[in-house]
Image (cartoon, rainbow, N blue to C red; front, top):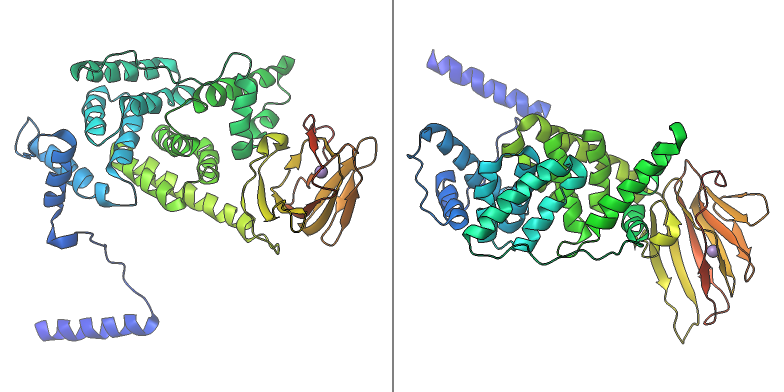
Length: 417
Ligand code: MN
C-alpha cells in the first residue's frame, strides 16, 4: 500500500514537471538559522527596551501569536528600516484610535530613532484625512509620552507658510503630483461650492500641512498611503499611490509599507491596497513605456507653471560651447503649460503622442510627431498634451543667453480642448 502511494506520488510529480506546473511553496526568510521567535525577541527588545516574555499577561497565547507575526516576520519583510516601520505603525494606530497601542509604539518609535518632531508631523498629517478630533486624541497620547520622557511641550513650531501664500505654496506641491483632478471633479456643484471645497484641500492639506518642515513630501506621501490603507478609501489610495511614486517612493517601498500595516489593519484592507498598487503600476507603465525616443527624466521642476503632471529631461544645458538649451518635455494626458512667452523665442520638435499648441487670439493647433512649431519672441502661447493622449516634444530655447520666459495664468478648462 505504501509502495503504491509512493509510485502514484512519483508519477504525479513527473506529470507536474512535464506540464510545467510548479506548486507554490511559502518562502521562509529566517537568515542565519534564526527562528521567528529569535527575530521577534531581538526586535521586541530593541523597540520596547524590555525583555521579551511571551508567557505573561491575561492572554499570553494571543500576545505570542501577534508578537511572533509582527516582530518576527513582518519586521523582516520588505525594504524599510525600523524607524520607518514604527512611524508607519504610529500613523496607522492614530487613524484607528487604538490609543493604548499608540502609546506603546510612540515609545517604540522614539527608541528606534524617530524624533519627537517627526512623530508630531506623522500625526499632524492625519488631520486632512481623518479630521481634527481623532488627530487631537492621538496628539494627546504623544504629549503624554513626551512628558513621561521629560521632553518639554509644545514642541517647536514647524509651519513654513504665511496667511497669503497657503494656496500658492500648496499648489506647488499638489499640482505636480495630482494635477487639477480635484478642482475638475468639484465643478458643477450648487453656487460653485465645489470650488471652495477644492480650495480648502489645496490650502489646508497641501498648504498648511505638506509645506511644514521636518518631513519631506516623499515621506509624507508614503505615510498617506498607510493612512488610506488603514481607512480603506481605495479610490483615494489609488491617487496617493501614484502621488507617492511621483514623489520618489519605489513600488517596493510602497508594498513594504502596506505590508507593515497588515497586522494592524487586517488582511482585507492590506490585500486590497496591494491590489490597488498593482493596478497603478500597470497604468503607470503606459506612461513609462510611452514610445518616445528620449528618456522621460524627472517630474518637471517647473511644475508650478504647468497644469497636470509633466516630466523634464534636459538634453543640453545652457553652456558656453554650444550656446543652446534643449530639453525633452513629456506631458501626461490633459497636462499643459500655463500661458507664457519667451523673449528669445522657442522651437518645438514633436516626438510622440498628440498635443496642442495655441497662440493668443488664434485657433488651437493639433500636433503630431514630426511637427515643428516655431514660436517667435514675445508671442503669448501655451503647449501641452491632448486631453486623451500622452505627448512629448523637444524644446529648443533660441537666441540665448538673453532668452527669458515670462509665466502667466494657467490655461483654463474652457480654453483647453
Ligand atoms: Mn513655450
